[in-house]
Length: 64
Image (cartoon, rainbow, N blue to C red; front, side, top):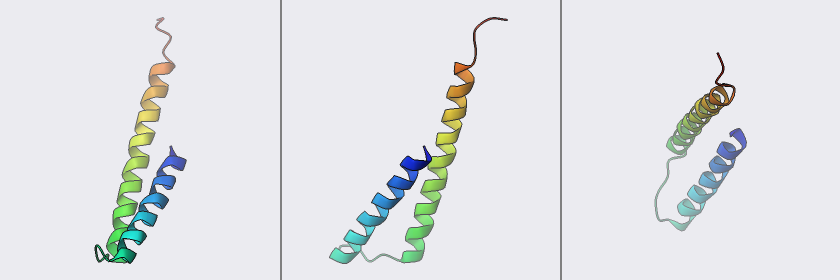
C-alpha cells in the first residue's frame, strides 16, 4: 500500500507542477506540500486499517 501512496504523491505533484507552469492556477508551494502530506498520511492510515482488518478476518478458522 505504501508504494501506491508514494506513486500517487509523485503523480499528483507532477500534475500540480504542470498546472502551475500552464498558468491555469497560481499555487502556493507550502499549501501544496501540506495537502499532499495530509492526503498521503490519510491514505497510509486507511490502507493499514484495511490491511489489518483483512488479515484479522483471514486468520479466523471458524472453529472454537
